[in-house]
Image 1: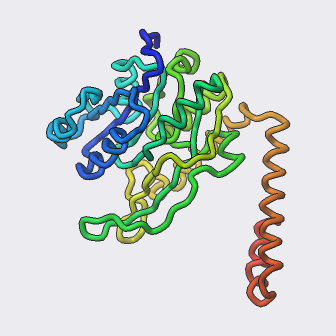
Image 2: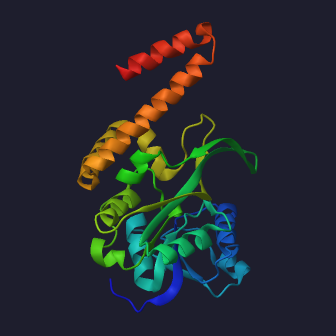
Image 3: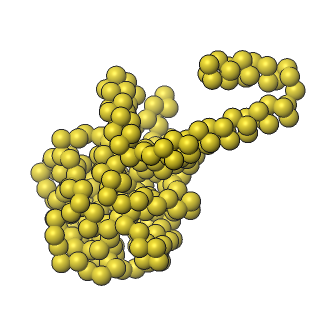
Length: 289
C-alpha cells in the first residue's frame, strides 16, 4: 500500500451507489466548507445508475476527483479509492452524512501536535424521517457509547474517524468479503498497531433514515432489523475479537463506568417520588439481576 505521500494533505473518500442528489450535494458542501483546506475528495460511483456529472460540475472544484467502477460493494470501492489517492491522512464521509466546518481542522491539528495516527471524534447520530421533500428530525444522540466504544472500536463510524495512510501498511486494506461492519473490522485492526485517540468534540452528523413505520431505511443499518440472527452472529464475532484489544486496566475502566452510571441512576430515582420510580426500579433491578 506504499504511495508517494503528500505532506499534511487529507484524502477524503466518498463511496456512493445511486445516491439522493440532494443529500450528496449536502455532503459535498460540508467538505467544501471545511476550515482546513488542504484536502482532495475522491467520489467513487460503485456501479450505480445515477448520473453525477452535473453534481460534480456544479461544485467546479479541482480538489474533487470522480471515478466510476463496476458494482463490487463498499469495501471494494474503498480499496479502489485508496489506490487512486496519495494524501498523508485519510478521512471518510458517506454520501448522506455531513461534517461540521471544524472537523478536519480539529482532527489534523490534534494529530500533528500529539503524533497520533488514528483519531475519532464525537458524532451526532440523527434519526430523521421524510415529510414531503423535507427531512424532519425525530431524535439525536451521541454515537459514542463511552468506554465500550473507546476500547472495542464499536460505534465508531467512518465519518468521524481520521487516520494516517501508513496504518494501511500495518493493517492491510479493507476486507472485500464483508458486507457490513467494514469500518469496525478495519478500526479493530488499526487498534492493534496504534493507540486510538478519542476527541470528545462533536464534528459531524450521521443520519439514520426512517421509513413511515420508523424502521431504518439505510441499506446497511436495515440489515440488522431485517435479519436479527445474522446481526447477532456478526456482533458476537466482533465482540469476541474485541478481547484481543483489552487489558486488565481496560476491564477496570468498564466496571468503573458502569458503577458511575449505576450511581447516577440511583440519584435520579431518589429525587423522584416512590410512586413514579417503583415500576422503573423493578424493571431496572430485573435487568441488573
